[in-house]
Length: 131
Image (tube, rainbow, N blue to C red):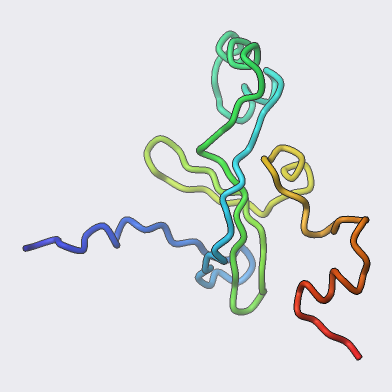
């Protein structure tokens, strides 16, 4: 059977924005972006004002083509990227900025841990033990 494994060629490959080495997925969830007002919908989806107002009128809009995901680079370590997939299956990546964290679903910014968790518990959960 020719082309039996052709689906593997379609797998997206991501590259580090700093050193251009191949990035590997960390196995985290895809945290999709949520837009609540018409201006954000128009800006991020590239639709007309009328369509953006219609979508905003229905409530918060979940963009399934844009998400935050954690990746690993051998030189630079773990990083979060904003991944956008367009209609022609072309993928664009950006380093996640602080304002992206407020627009996601069920995600806490890893740079600012939960303040109700003690420092000891936070380090212990990461497997870092300092004596």
